[in-house]
Length: 253
Image (cartoon, rainbow, N blue to C red; front, side, top):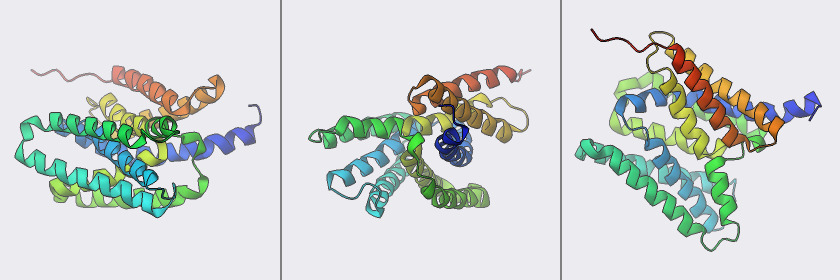
């Protein structure tokens, strides 16, 4: 595609969607790495996806408010469950998160078993359709993410376990519906992992890793005619590896 205006009209909204997801998930990524519960994102996102699929199973409008409520409710119930299990069995929390993820994944397959387009729905949930993000929905998404970030940075540690899991569930639910599960996981973990040993400006470096990954992935997917979501995951991972190589692991003496 050689027309710059046409390219911008396609890639512009997609990059803004990536910018919004990056803005909200990078701080949460730092926290899940610190807590050692990196797979919580996959579990909560998968259950939120089950909420979306369940709404579709009931015949509700795909972009309707009922679907949003279904997805958010499923994610919040999961968040409350994981809050309780972390308090009760903290030593096996990561294993419990893995079980929740498997239950969500298999539940989605069961709900889609009788749907002739089930495979396509599952693919959209996992990989997303970032190139087809509607510009009209971005202002509302920006407002939601700004509210989440205001609560996160405003309350911080005062959120407690329940507040953290609930706010995290909201961030992941809206992000999955915007860019897909794989990109949400990459955006959450890769930037934080790449800057894990950064001694200063960690937030700036992490945001740069994510945004560069989105930009390169979108351009590469357009040039190579490959799925954008999967391509962005790979470019973000490569940028993260390069960024991590520039950081020195502190020597304990």
